Length: 234
Image 1 (tube, rainbow, N blue to C red):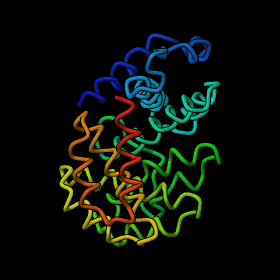
Image 2: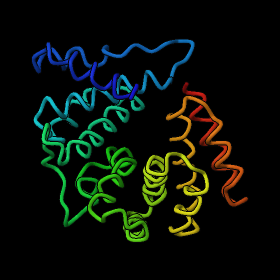
Image 3: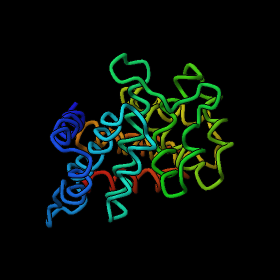
């Protein structure tokens, strides 16, 4: 809810500028706190900008991504990408902003059509659509992750972990059981994605720590790191 509040503010804020003005202002829209440089709030500003750009250009993600590419700093640019790719999925079937860059016949699209620098943020969001298309058949969805480009399989599993965590209302037992439906080599990435989601959801680490304790010993280090990294943004 509160992250969505940030998204909405950014969507509204950029509507006051024409395209030329927006390009000029892009790099100064979000202000970094020198005492907490990469906070969740700072991320949500750039991420919300990506949502707003996608809506601005009537769900044309390729147009929106070109505007994200005006951003000169890499972390901030990736955060903008993530908002574009998330908006592409959440608008699907909403009746409010209809997605145009999704393909049921290719549930990984547009991740297999965007540039190399845009792919990490795409794969970190895309399983939300994969699971829609495959009606939450988890083994099938994990199988799709297993077949993406090798360097992005782990990212796809992190995305699965986030989605599983949300659907399970953060329940550690459900997360561990469902992440176990994927390949054991990448199970830790699924657990890590779920742990980060638990922190962001509660603004606290208790549920993530409970998940890490229940996880297979081989996955606990990755789970703990994801938890600590997420807590550091709060």
